[in-house]
Picture 1: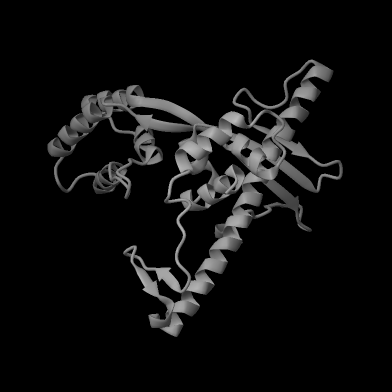
Picture 2 (picture 1 turned 90 degrees about the vertical axis):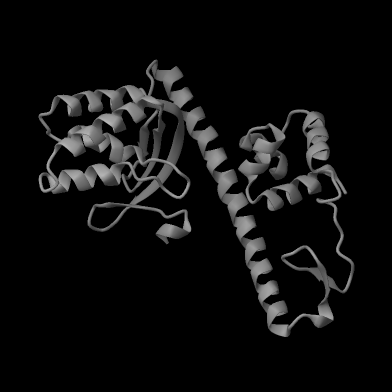
Length: 261
């Protein structure tokens, strides 16, 4: 099996190009270009890494003819599998194969769009001696007729350090000192802000929203200062959005994910 085919299998097995890229130690852009056949640099090192990480019997595993592997990893004779189970399996596998192809197209489009947009901005900056967009890299480009817009938005990834625990302790003190029947709405907001999601993460927006509450209390003020001190920027994420103006003059986002279709 060629290493490029092995790479395609690896992306399918990992569930995304980004996951395979992280495991290989390369950028998603590099892996995307290799898979698309547009990578111009030498691929020897990448090929060696693909074979090292994914050239195992797991990736090359062959299921004997007449068998299917079940969820426990056992080989089951196809003739013993119910017809409805086989039909369901075939339907799901076909849908997954199509979805992976679409995912690859969308990922490649995003990476190419990012490169092309940056090249355009660099060219404009060189020509006019000015940088387009804000300091954070946010920029909106509009077509000549005003019908379409392309927006690049960069947002910070926020997290909190251990100082947040000090803020929580001060806030707990405030809650104990306040009578149980006072400020019920504020109490609910505070308790909700420190709830964690399924991944054990605290919602930064809700925590930061506490600073907007107008509470005249010394301990509360110190707690809000502790929240500000605990805030850290761990990285950034870039989003690209395309818009089309409707007959009413409003820009509507062109959906590129299932949740908005």
